[in-house]
Image (tube, rainbow, N blue to C red; front, top):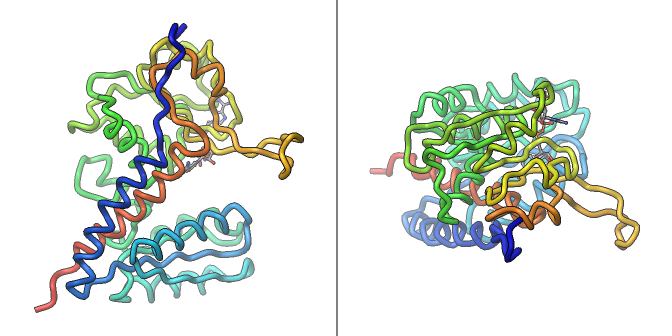
Length: 299
Ligand SMILES: NC(=O)c1ccc[n+]([C@@H]2O[C@H](COP(=O)([O-])OP(=O)(O)OC[C@H]3O[C@@H](n4cnc5c(N)ncnc54)[C@H](OP(=O)(O)O)[C@@H]3O)[C@@H](O)[C@H]2O)c1
């Protein structure tokens, strides 16, 4: 047991706002040179969770002085129409980054849409070119949630070099890119990475060996205290809404980690909400500014 019961809460809100403040300065300098970073945010349909994410991304753009181009398409929008929109955004000089909010309606191929994006404007880092470059350790857009996890660790002074990082979840948007990121030969990485998933046998064997445990499964409070090593660092990526009759809304958000019990054992942990979530948006803004920075200066 962590005898003093004072695990550090890794405050994602605070770290994200520090990142955004740094960007604010850079954006102001860009604007003074008539370069206004622009992000196109495309939403198809009316999935309530997606609407919340999109609203928050657009609000952050407005707050920082990033031009936000909103494209809200109906749920019955055809794949062809969406591809045409992406084609036009790829060549629109005001747009430096393009984000297509996932998931898309079933009749649209997410793979086709992602592959249609210009890799230079793929600020979500999901295009195969960026995924491949990440794996190769080359300059690229790193997807926002994994980049957010890495930044949370580095800005909290938690070293990953030589550490055993265990990631539970192997999705293309979190688990796999985070594994690729943290195994790189670089100062903020150099970790020994294990990736677990639904077919992993005896998962506790791995999670209990983790110096840094990342939960990214989408299963409410799955990681119990017995699965975590004393003094480990825990990053909870999960965002799950569970029923809670004591709340006015009738529900509340929890992560993939049983926070109250795990908190007592660990050295540091991210809360849900207020951990990884705010970092994802901060990294999106960082990637958008990076995309704008890459625009050659006008003669
Ligand atoms: N905070 C943020 O900004 C942010 C961003 C993205 C996602 N999220 C949250 O992160 C969570 C994961 O998202 P995702 O998109 O990566 O999810 P996903 O695509 O559903 O992938 C979940 C992964 O977890 C594994 N898994 C599921 N149940 C498991 C179990 N019982 N034991 C072991 N592994 C299990 C799955 O294994 P298989 O591959 O074998 O099926 C899969 O690899 C969700 O709660 C999501 O809302 C948060």
